[in-house]
Amino acid sequence: MSKIKLKLAATGLNNTDNPGPGVPVIRSIRESGTFSMEVVGLAYETLEPGIYMPGITDRTYMIPYPSDGVEALLERLEYIQSKEKIDVLIPNFDAELYTFMKSSDRLEKMGVRTFLPTLSQLEERHKSNLPRFGKKYDVLVPKSKDILSYQDIEKLREEFEYPLMVKGKFYDAYLAYNEEQVRMHYNKISAKWGLPVIIQEFIRGTEVNVVALGDGTGQTVGAVPMRKQYITDKGKAWGGITLDDPAMMELTRHIISKTHWRGGMELELIKTTRNELYVIEINPRIPAWVYLAVGAGQNLPEALVKLALGMEVKPFRRYDVGKMFVRYSYDMIVDLPRFEQLSTLGEVEPEKSFKSI
Image (cartoon, rainbow, N blue to C red; front, side, top):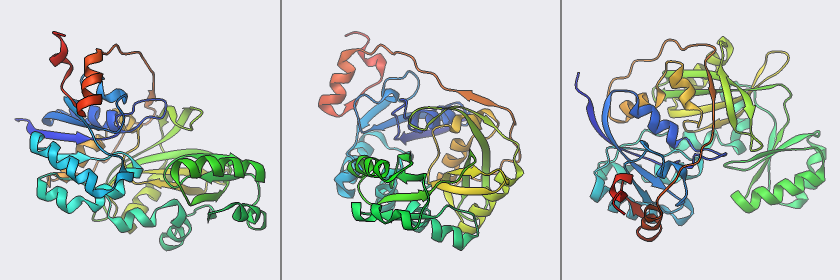
C-alpha cells in the first residue's frame, strides 16, 4: 500500500521542562507509516528545541503570538502557505486555539485543514465554566469561582476551605494554604495570563489523566488512561504508566458522547479514596504525553490527521496496560547560522542546508 503524501504544520515545539505537544505529535505521525510527509514547524520563540531536533521539522517559520490578533496570524499563514502548500495544521497550545478556531474558514479557503473543537465546546469546558459543565453533563467537578481583585480574595473564606487551588485561565495551578499564598499566586498568574484567576476547591485523592480523541459525532475514536509516576516542579508528567480503569474509560466516553467532542482532549481527574472521579480540567487538545498512548497501541495523532483529511477512522478497541514512559533531556549542538537565519528572516531551512557553513 502506497503512503499518502502529506504536508503537516504543527505548533508546540517547546520540548523543555514545560513541554508542548508538538514534538510527540509530529513524532507519532512520522512513525505511523501511513504518510510520506514533510513537516513545517510553527514557532513562537527562536529557541524552541523542536526547531533543531533531528527528524522533527523539515522547515520552521516564526509566527506571531495569539495576543497579536487573528489578522496578524492569518497574514503570516498566508505567506507560509504560498511557499509550503500545507495540507493539515495541528495547533498544540490552549492559548492559541481560539485564534485558530476563529480562522478556520479562511484557513480552509487557503487549503489548510484542521480538526478542532467548536468554539462552544472550547468555552463550555473552560475552567471558569466547569461547574455549569458538571451540572449539564452529570459529572463530578470541584466547586470553583473566578476572582478579579484582592477584594474577591478576602471573601474566599466565606465559600471555600483551605487549602484551595489557584489556577490561570490557560495554564498554571498552585495549591494555597492561606490568604497570603492566594495573593502571591494571584499576582503571578494574573501577570502572566491575565484575568480572571480561578479558585477551585481542593479535592484530595490521586491525580490521573486520559488522552482521548472524539470524531465530532459523539464517538470516541480512542482513549488511554494513565497515572503520573514522576512530576516536575511545574506539575508536568516526567513519567507515567497506562492503567486498566474501566471507570475512567466510561467517564471519557460519556463526556465525548454528550458533548460531541471534536478533536483531541485531555481529562485531568482526581480519584478519591471512595473511588469517585472528579473532573478538575478538560484540556482541549492533545497533551504532551500522547506518545505513551502511541506506545500502548493507539496512534491518536495519526487518527486526528486522517479525520482532518476526511478519511475513515475506525475506533481503537484496546491498548496495552502497564506501558510506561520516562522523559529525559539531552544537549544538542546547533550551528549559529541556523539560529541567525530564524532570528533575522523568521524562517529556517533544514539542518543539511548549513553543512557547508
